[in-house]
Length: 459
Length: 122
Image (cartoon, rainbow over all chains, first blue to last red; front, side, top):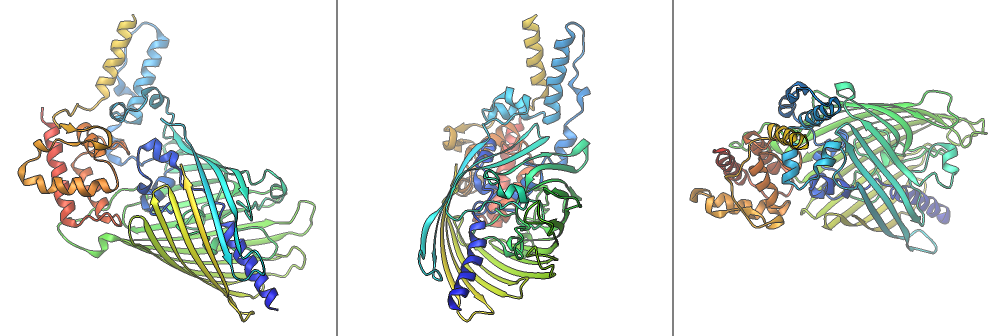
C-alpha cells in the first residue's frame, strides 16, 4: 500500500514539477533591443512585474501614451511637395511618413542611443532578436525506492521575440535539447503529441497590434491561451500553479499548455483586459475556445501609465494594486484520431493578484469538469483546485515564497501541498531556486517530501 | 541632383527632430557617464548624491543623462519632460526594493526638472 501511495505521489509531483520545466523564459533579446535591464520587467526572472505584464499585453511594445499619439501628426505634416522623379518623391514621402508616424523623436533617440537608422526606418529590431536559455535541475524525492537524487533533467531552448514597426509582435520558443523527465508543453493535440517533433516548437505566434487603429490585437500561431493571470512561465519558483497545470484522468489537457489557436485581445479603459480565442485540435469537429477578463485596481494601468500620486502625502494605497481575473475554457479531446472515445470538458477559474510593495499575494481557484476523462467509462468527474501563495522580496536578488495547494481530483483524491521556496538571482539573467514540497493525500497515511534545486540562465 | 536629394533628406530629419539640448554637460562615457557636477547648484547637491547612489542600483546614469539631453526617454522613446520625471519618480517610489523614500523621490524629481529647464534654455 505504501509503495502504491509513494508511486502515486511521486508521479503526481513529477507530472506537475517536470511539466513546469516547459517554460517560456525571460527574453534577453528584449533587454538587448531596448537597452534595459531584466529587472525592468521582472521581479526574479521570469516572473513578471506589472511593467513586464504591460509589455506582454501590448504585444512587446512600450506603450505610447496619449501625449505622444497627439504629437505624431499625420502624413500631411511631412510636407514633401514638388515635381521631378516621381519614384524618388514617393520614397521621400514614405521616409517622412515613417518618421512622423513612429515618433518624430526616434531618429534623435536612435542617434543618441547609437541605433541604426536604416533598421529603425525599416521597422526592424536593432539587434538580432535571439536568445538562448538553459536549465539544470536536480531533485531529491524521498518517496522513490531508488534514484532518490536525480540530476538528469536539463534543457536548452532558443528564444526569439520582438516587434516589427510597432505593428507585428512575434515570439518563438524552440526547444533545442531536453533530457530527463522533460515534457515540454505536452500537446493536447493528439496527433502532435505523438510526433517526435511535437515538442520542438513550443511556442511561435504573431500579434497584429491595434488592428485597423482599434484597441484590438489579433494573435495567431501556437501559444498558451490567455486564461489565468499568470502565464506558465510567470513565476519565480519551479513548480507550476496547480490551478492551470492539473490534469484529469487520462486526458493530457492542461489549461496552461500551448495550443494552435487564434486570439483577439485588447485593453479597454486602460484597466480592463480581455482575450477571446478559438483553438484548433486535430480531429476536431466542434467548437473549442476560451475567454478571459481581468481588471486592475491601483498601480500603473495595463498600458504602464503611472497613477497620479501626491508626493507630499504618504498613503499605503500608493503601494497597493490588485488584479482580478476570470476565465473559462470549453473543449473536447481524445487519445487518438482513430478512437471513438471523446472527452468533453470545461475549465473555469478566478485569480487574484494583490501586491503591497515588496509583498505579493496570489489566490487562485479553478474548477473543471470532464465527461469521459479516462476515455472509456464515460463517468463524469469534477476537479476543484484552490491555491494561495505569499511572496516577499527580501532584496532585489532574493525572493521567498510559500504556497499552499488543495486539489480535489476527479477520482475523489484530495491532495494538499505545502511549498516553501527561495529564488536567488545573483545576476539578473541567472536564477537559483530551492523549493521544498510537502505533499499529503487523504487516502494515504504517509506524506511525500521532495526537494528541488533549479539553475536557470538566459543570455 | 544627389546633393539636392541629400540636402532634402537632411532637412527632413532636421524638421522632424526635437530641438537639440546641448546645455547639459556630462562627464565620462558609457556606464560611467554622469552629469557634470559643476553645473549642479549647491542646494541640489544632496539630490545629486542620492541620484548618484540610488538610481544606479538598477540602471546607468547614462540613461538619465541622455533623457535630459535629448528630451526623450531612451528605453520607451517617450518625451522626457516634467510630467515624465514625476511619473518616473512615482514608478521608483512604488518599485519594490528601489530603496527610495518619498523625500528622495521629491529631491531627485526636482533636480531632474531643474536640469530639463537648463537643457531647454537657448
